[in-house]
Image (cartoon, rainbow, N blue to C red; front, side):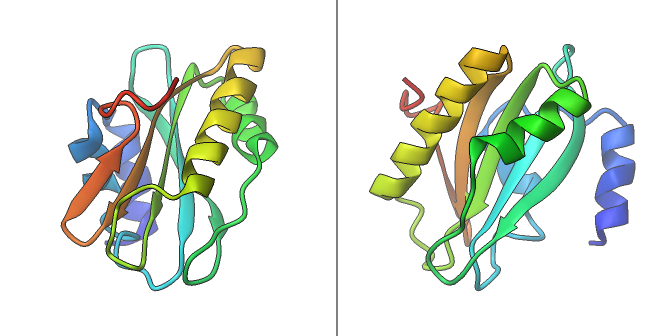
Length: 137
């Protein structure tokens, strides 16, 4: 699947209603051998405005800062954000760093008035949702 195909899909009002939908939209990244952090920008109606690859890291780490997420969210008039990244190890269990950055991003979103709806980790045929596991705080 080409990135242009995904952009066309978002013009057709894709909704992400759970981790399975996020997993589907990460199909082109979930099996990468480097970690990649992605943000989905959501409008007031719950539809995806756009998807952005924020960071491509190394085998087991990706650098991300809340300003990178919320700069684009503000520019695109997003109501909410869903973040997702892959784990090249194949294990979707969140690391301590995953918990730390999720908490930091949620706090930044609370300040600017843009909700973090979920953080989904994908790998292989599995995914882990912070929201579905009541880990967003």
